[in-house]
Each structure stands twice: as structure tokens, then as C-alpha cells.
Image (tube, rainbow, N blue to C red; front, side, top):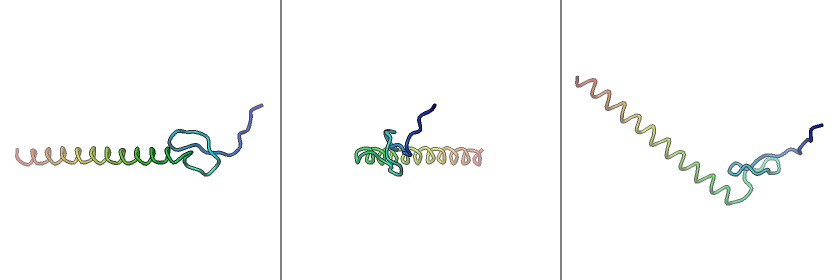
Length: 65
């Protein structure tokens, strides 16, 4: 027979079990998660900016030839 666990959630940063409805187990995890989200947003912005620059370069090259 399988054991039934009480309702719970997990820390969004370290995956530790938490009481249901909580997002982080500590302030340290909340800060680390916030920092990681900021870095991910910056990385995505740089990627899409690079794609736009390459697309514009290819478009302008196509117009010149």
C-alpha cells in the first residue's frame, strides 16, 4: 500500500518540500531565484537582439545585391 503524503509544495529554487502554498524555504532561496530569473531575462534579451541584428544584416545584404 502506498503512503499518502500531506498536501505540500516545493521550494522554487532548491526543491525542498514546504507546507502547501509557500514558494521558498528561506530568504536566501528567494534571492537566489530572483537573481537567476534576472540573468535568464538578460540572456534571452541578448539572444533576441542578436537574432534581430543578424536578420537585419541579411535583409540589408539582400537589398544591396
